[in-house]
Length: 266
Image (tube, rainbow, N blue to C red; front, side):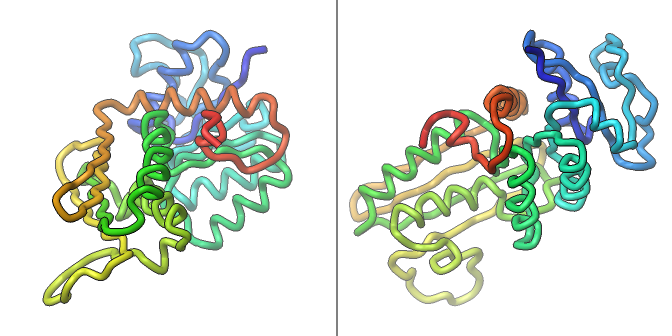
């Protein structure tokens, strides 16, 4: 059965990439294209940027979601949470790649998962989620005598730091160490900081140019250094991961899932 897909932020870079991925797949179809209120793209064909029309016009009317099975949302927390309310009304499942939710926002997602099925992830890339699994294994083996540092770089337009993916990497390491990230994270360093404390996870954030997303985790020990790196060169990896999540959700009614579950890694 063909899955009817709605896409939020349809005129943005990620939205357009998602539209192209949906159009190229045989088992999904674009049924709704949303954009923010007042966008210049309202009323335009959602596929116009590809040089072909698909007959789906971009709209800011959230009531259009009743025509979809699943909404894919890579926008911003405030927009995603607004969409979440409407999706619950119409029984539309959600795939959420939005990052930067506060505690209240995360609680809203969890509560909504009692009514609709949701996949949310800091990163939808299949490769990145494999890295999360590798980090669990590495951190378990390197729990003593090794210092963990996470370095990430993104384009200059990214508004949150560190990235959601970097945070998720830190959480994977902390879990393997039987810790919570909030207790052992060092988010920044400046001035005379003193010697590095054992058992901490350091973060470094770089911003510039058009970098889509680079992440490196360093386990530094005496006499050796292990580095696990993922570099994204094209946003299609997030779109393909999202479609894989859509196929997973097709057979779920409620629940809150992550990409590790989608990929069968846990």
